[in-house]
Length: 112
Image (cartoon, rainbow, N blue to C red; front, side, top):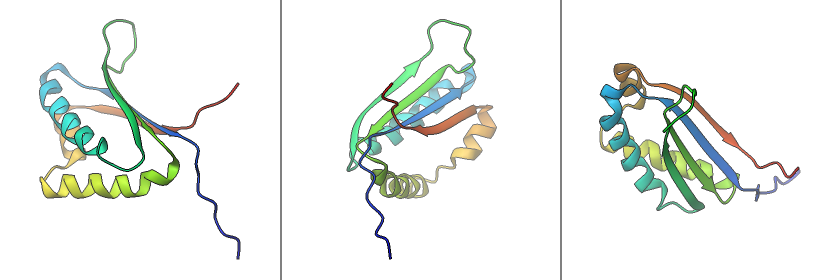
């Protein structure tokens, strides 16, 4: 049996959102709650919550979280799911109700 080696490469979570103006405050309140939890998790390195100020891009809110490694993601995902269940928050319902569009992915750094 081959033992799986832990992934020690940093991982970057980048979430891009199109948030209509009418839903901005509610959306950002939920982001703040979630990021407060993320900042307390093992493997957290840093985060940014960005709002577009100029340019033709479609996405007006971007969140960025750097994790020490891929190994941090499983426990963090479980912690976020528990938080959302505990406070009765349904992310997909809010996205649908507010008309939020998303592009969410994990990235690794290229050394080129």
